[in-house]
Image (cartoon, rainbow, N blue to C red; front, side):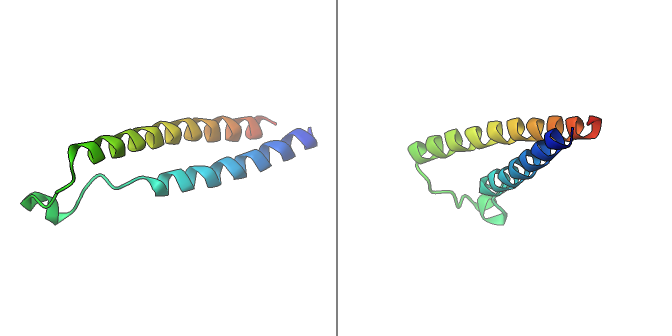
Length: 78
């Protein structure tokens, strides 16, 4: 039991750090006051690439959060 708990603790720490990094890589949803005056000059192709990257980061965030939850619950049970 001690070995399993130790492995789960290490995995939980690594996944938690990875989750923090993935969340910090995401862009904020609001652009601030500049967006209300039409300050966005990016082309549609760069928006598509950025949206695709953001969608992947959001999916990865959800997956990592679920893994953290499962690991935390399993550590509690053990």
